[in-house]
Amino acid sequence: MEISPIKDTLRIALVGDYNPDIVAHQAIPLTIDDAAAVLELVADYDWLTTSDISSSEDLVGYDAIWVVPGSPYRHLEGALIAIRYARENSIPFLGTCGGFQHAILEYARNVLGWIDAAHAETDTTGR
Image (cartoon, rainbow, N blue to C red):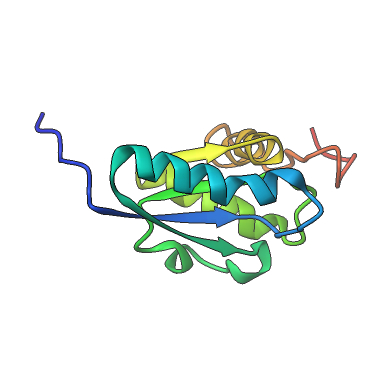
């Protein structure tokens, strides 16, 4: 298997509902910038609110997807679309805090077939 060289510019989708009061939301861009500087590449990132994601087409062209902390998200389905897109297209994915919890939810629903899988923050009737 041939390994592709690292691109000069990486496009990263930051999926979540930006809130300046969440310390992680302030730190994430700084972290990306620092890592890019060490790797001597350019990292472009876009904050995509969960309500802005209505289909996988909204994620085409991104090299990585980071579902950030800050749940419950305004639009659960937007977060799940992003996570599923990353999983099904082998896009590097990072889910931190609520992002990781929602990755488990997406997997339970779409791989395990537990259609009633739910997150306790927003729904107490599911599994």
